[in-house]
Image 1: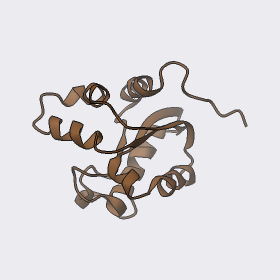
Image 2: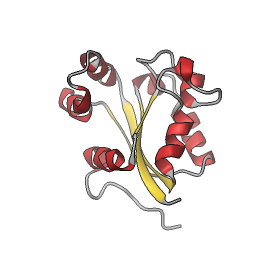
Image 3: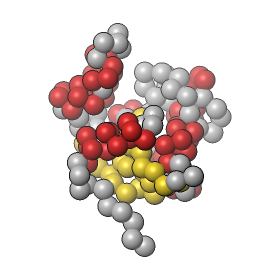
Length: 143
């Protein structure tokens, strides 16, 4: 196993439900460290740019509008096999298919409003981290 970084987003419905601390606690209990974090309200350009990979999909406009509907919390998580560990904590995209005890099973209302986003691989994670935090927005833990 190797130490990795992954991008995580608590989406507008997760922020609205006041789940930030609960979700952070789950990350930390699983051995993931938060090495960058910020709350922001995505602009149209940010939401469109971040989800550009889905531009041709029928759900793209709804996804962009949803991600702009309220503030989000964006964080970078670091740890052993961070990408897969994080995705395991999140659960399946559709909360009906998610395993018991996962964030989406416990808190998501639907496949559209599913509380959290997680990078799907290390290459994607690097791109997504750069999108939100640039070259110097991550603060490695020194103690």
